[in-house]
Image 1 (cartoon, rainbow, N blue to C red):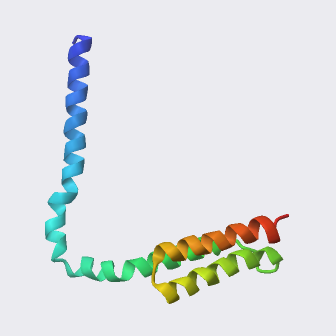
Image 2 (cartoon, one colour; image 1 turned 135 degrees about the vertical axis):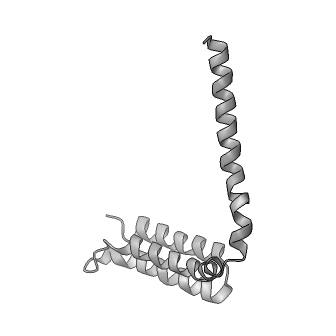
Length: 109
């Protein structure tokens, strides 16, 4: 097979696979919209994912050292901002800012 035909065949196969992979979610989406399981998961997953992320981020934090105060304060600010304003972006940015400032100034070693 010549190099030009090989290259064309490779591009055609790649395009077909890419198109199929991008079309697949839309083909599967219609039956899932009526699924009770998907509806249940869509209401419960956001909180579950956030709990998993918090546990993952704080799992190896030594509770006996003073540097635990920066993440603890950031977590408290994040929770407080979210309960006050119900704005995920504000909560995440506020908590991140508090953590960065405390970790780089007050608790830097």
